[in-house]
Image (tube, rainbow, N blue to C red; front, side, top):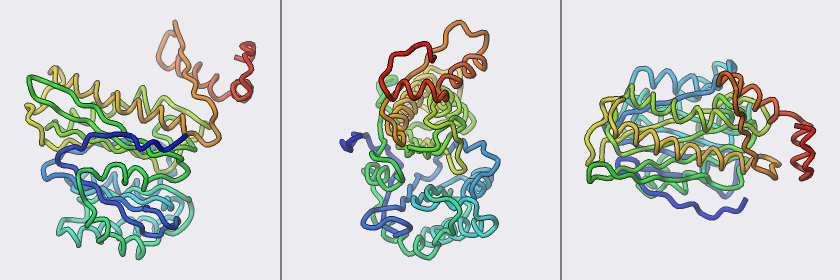
Length: 320
């Protein structure tokens, strides 16, 4: 794929700053800080891999007992398979950012992606925090989308702008992912924001509803990762009324916009799959249940016979 600098719409209440920490890559940015407006709501879903990485453990814990103000993301090192030392490293990074912003450490959610089994270079990461903070701005989405890339060949970024009762609201998201792609949030990170005010319970419902047919319905190689996460934040900066009811028209519009963003990002991940030359969508009809349909679809999608036929552009439908 060619990096064509995808377009996006900034989200009021979200600022992003990127910097080069030298974690693994040279001459590129690999550290991102996302600053959220005060009183922002935050929802997240994480990998279901039982061997989850240290930042996943810490982010889950922090999200369960605080209102996040910052997302701290690094590429190049997954901080996975690192045991208790990895947890201490993730916490140290949160404390370092919190000290610079005069907030509590549990108001920082850490995320890492990259090589598994290596110690996170906390000192290098912490030293780059001031540069990332000085770069914070509403238009930092593209730099951030590039900074979180690992084996990706292009940044993944998109937006939707919706109108409701004479007011507008925005949904913008970025993602990374290329290999170890399999449902249950597989080897990918995604960050989506809206300027609506949304009840936290409804925000979580919206995210889970959007992830089901998008991020949780893609596969490249059938492997589930240790670090994947998807975050949805609502900054309450638009002129629209607050979303407080699942039955409201505004909630339905929000869900449609978030699902559209998730779907576009998910397809971008598959298109950019490691070694991929084709994008294939499988439709299963007349299944008795959704679970049955998924089983049929993934049996086909993971078949080496089918994959080789597709790679060779050989229309041998007998293999299917």
